[in-house]
Amino acid sequence: MAIYFLRHGESEANAKGLFAGQRENSPLTQHGLEQAREAAEELQLITIDIIITSELKRALRTAEEVAVAIGFDAKKIETDKRLLEYDMGALTGTPLRKLTSNELVSAEGAEDPYDFQARVLSFLREHKDTKENILIVSHAGVGRIIETARLELDSSSFYDVPPYPNAEPVRLDLSWLN
Image 1 (spheres, one colour):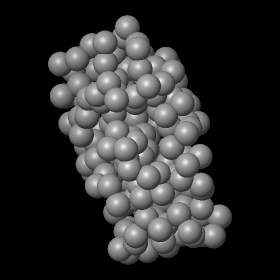
Image 2: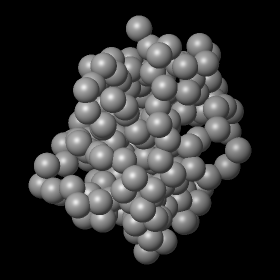
Image 3: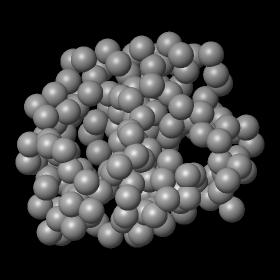
Image 4: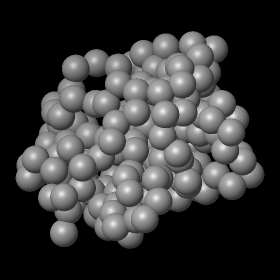
């Protein structure tokens, strides 16, 4: 079947213009909750068999909103640490500004981008041959690292790849993934 990727709805960090990463466990805004419900309308056209999410509040809450709206038992939502956002180290909680990938991955305490890609691709490899429809609810950085791998770019350049929009389902074509 297929794997669908849904970036969480707008978080408080998004609204405040802050880098969140995985250390800033920012909740959804009211607008983010509405975005999750709107995404669910589109996802109702698909039978979602499994929902797997990052354990961060913004992703988990998005997954819960979608589950309720599509009639999926929210108690069956799974979490997976491999879907956590990129750890931005010292940049966490600082105001958003234009950064190059090199500046991001060089921040003090930032996650190694190769390790980041390895953990995300480990998850995708585990599920790529699924016989069910899986909805992944995750983060901008995770979507960026997936696209970086798909485009065969260097992992350290992932931040230069445009993010998936908040709360817009994307069907992942994983034919490139070995």
